[in-house]
Every structure is written in C-alpha cells, then in structure tokens.
Image (cartoon, rainbow, N blue to C red; front, side):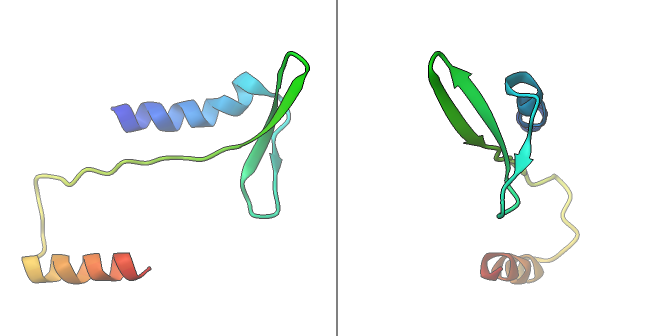
Length: 73
C-alpha cells in the first residue's frame, strides 16, 4: 500500500507543483517550483518497492540464476 502511495504522489506532483511539465534530453520529466523570489528546477523520480510473494515457482538454483542476471543488468 505504501508503494502505491509513493507512485500516486509522484504522478500527481507535476499537477500540484506546476502546470507545465517538460522532458529533458535524458527522458526525465522536469518541472519548476517558485518559492518567494527563487525558482527551482526539479526532476521527477519514481520509486517502486517490490516485496517477494508467498508463492515461488522456481527452485533455489533457478532463483539464484535469475538474481545473477538481474544484478548483471
């Protein structure tokens, strides 16, 4: 539930803080926040937390192989 809240907040942040959202050359969404006489250029990041489930279909060896591929990526 907490990760859903984080994702929803990040998706709504550009609506709350600014109407204009721009994508930079690296593909990050950016927006500007004005605070008094200072303007801040912000980058939007998304955090997703994954938890392992109760059911696992693969063996320990297969899980280790998958993890090695994940870390190599």
